[in-house]
Image (cartoon, rainbow, N blue to C red; front, top):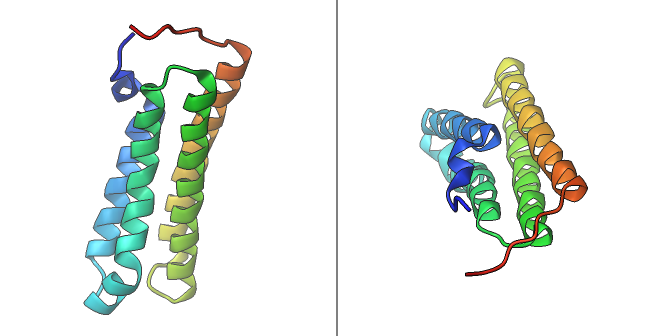
Length: 127
């Protein structure tokens, strides 16, 4: 088993791109907006990547899917932060829609992996 197989997963690559996009966006804000939104938004975006990665190291499908669920939660949190930033006038509809479309794409990939995992269960034995 390739423990670091997540490095090849498109959903992981796409989550990293979203994380970089969010980081660049937050860095462009004035300090008061960074204080209000920066830490939480950056953590949520990074959490998507980290939970996808952590899922790859799990031996059971149930454990793996649990980390996919957490990644989906972090994805929702990232979109919620972007929605609030839009409501407060810090980002425009175009930037929000880009984040939203990226999030939809990643969510579909994660959900597809979950569905595939349930249809084709793995049995791993620990070494």
